[in-house]
Length: 387
View 1 (cartoon, helix red, strand yellow):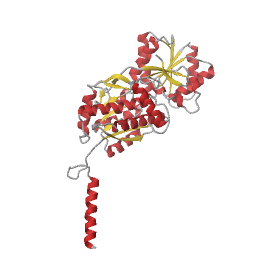
View 2 (cartoon, helix red, strand yellow; view 1 turned 90 degrees about the vertical axis):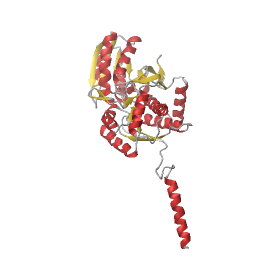
View 3 (cartoon, helix red, strand yellow; view 1 turned 45 degrees about the vertical axis):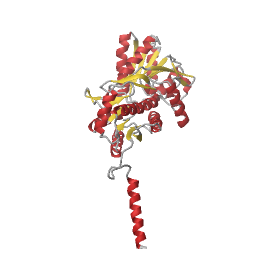
View 4 (cartoon, one colour; view 1 turned 60 degrees about the horizontal axis):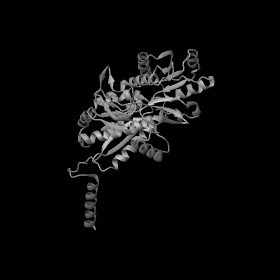
């Protein structure tokens, strides 16, 4: 009996050692997948953005991991609730987990809060939707390892003014923006500058701050000034209030928004018929008929039961861009974060990427993306190409 017990203990030890080791490296656990981390608002008012980013990232990772390729991912995504302090806490948890590459955060303020930490830890990061310039630089000095998949705020402002002018959407422009967030203020500033260049006549500008829910005075001033276009570089919740209150007044200008307005059709209790004819500047239209978009939208709908927004499309592209760069650079999961970061920075600043949100997408050394925006219009309760 004693010999039998000793034999069983020996067998158990061999089994245990075999189960803990995944390679011939003297007992050291081999690494077979890159640890891809990130955080976003999975709860709270901005959850519509974070959930689409997370779900799209999961979809891309599942597709890539099913390919016959050496590059595989393990994804960990946390809820930062669109809060800077919570984003910093999430970053700490991701570092403890062993994050090697990152999708960073979804919204600009949390991105800006964790950006220095990514630089300190030499981790390559690309945010799907953090559009403020504060995401990629501090005190006019660029981090160098942080990239954007979305348009920067200045580019959105410039492109919006150009589109309104080129398409002759109106002769008198009013602007309503939120001056206590970098996102809205940054877009407004560049829009106003470009409007002057393009000869657009801005007849009224009104600014509000977080917590505002009454926009009657802003709309009355715009109407009194004769504005036939209202530019709204704001988020979808406030936009839904403005559309509702304008309808109550019987005021029907052309409303033109940017990517933060993507989600207005999902606001609880909002009459989506009031968004008919609203323009959005975005790099993605879910009704596009190209093969990549059709495949992505179909897979997303099948898996999650809803149509993805632009934030999701940017996240999907971000994962595939990371995948392509890792593969092209020959990175391996057992490399140091610093070496992986250096290789990805070199690759991103030299490659061209074809994705859902643009063909021939490139990046500057600053981390800023270069791609062509698309305009969509809300028609019959859905986003449709405005072209």
